Length: 65
Image (cartoon, rainbow, N blue to C red; front, side, top):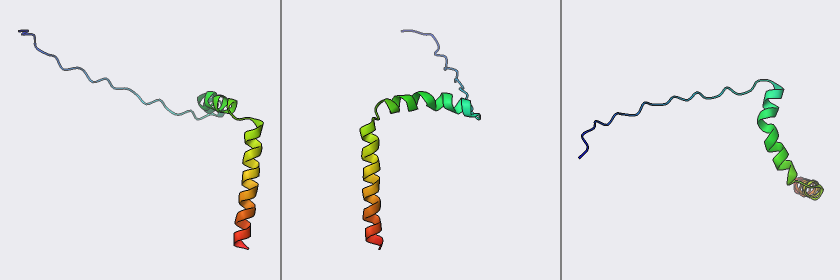
């Protein structure tokens, strides 16, 4: 049987990074995600969203009037 005493592990404290305050810093944080998301959005998606928004608006105004 092992008679060594088990030492408790020291807790590791990590610091939370401070959020960027400048526009450039914010762009560096979100920029890669925006580029990745934009690769999946094509012209057809944009047109479909515009048409769907227009039809929804027409439908809602028809209900309200």
